[in-house]
Length: 374
Image 1 (tube, rainbow, N blue to C red):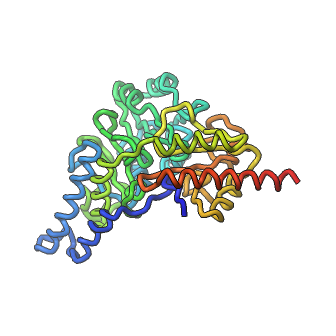
Image 2: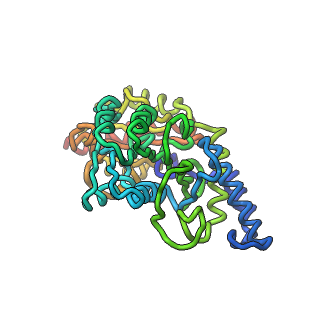
Image 3: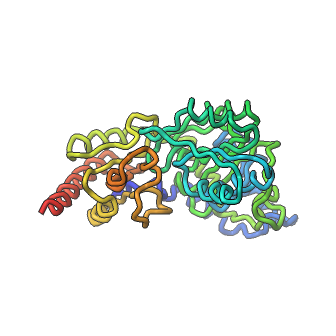
């Protein structure tokens, strides 16, 4: 299998497997005071330090969660619980982990402003600043990089204006972590979400950075684990894996060499193909390509038969037949959006895979168009 669906999930790094395996016999409850409990606690705090170092934060500002989705929900809903009068500014291209809790808040009477992207999928900073300045209490939540197009958003510029207005700033960095450097102070954010399985860590573990002094109410109630923000006995193995994945990611950030090669070859060899967000700043591993006249689900199925893994977009909504909300927000027609396929690469992919995949993609697209022409 040529695996080009790394934005959906990534293979577990060997070093991460080894780190997790070293914890198999550490069974104590990390909240216990005896030696077995404290061995577990040490694993957690080592991982917490690694995560903090990865995003240039302090260990006490890291909360372990069950996923990036849960981290986003705690950030959005937790802020709403702590600030009953606060408004919300987000974008129309966010992941559903942000859009759905924001929409629920809107249904319950909260003020919500959704920013629209330009044709390349980027939020216009000047337009957004007007919306930010229109409120004086609330949360700005905007993704660092889009999960479908890879387009990087102007977080730093918007966060600076939001801070002038007294707003809290959250960014969903799930698709940016492991691909570009992350520094919470340079970005100017108060909260930031990541998920381990997007950068060669295990599934079922994420983290939420909450800047010291920022008020966020717990969404779940129970024990005092994770500063009472995420109660429940911690998943030691997964936490250890996340910590190691963060340590490795700091050493192996992606570059755009494979993506650029892939796009150049596709555009040169496959007629009526186009790259979504091509002229915007993007994370270096993501390529969203449209093939005019075809349906992306059919393309993905046919590629799978050729042992190439790709995606129609976000894995959470891959089974849906509707056009991508991200691409339609970029003013693409429904037909163009439904013809678009996401290819996403990792440090384990090779040039040889690019050559093989481009040839097979050209064959698949050609055959599909011939069948449609009959």
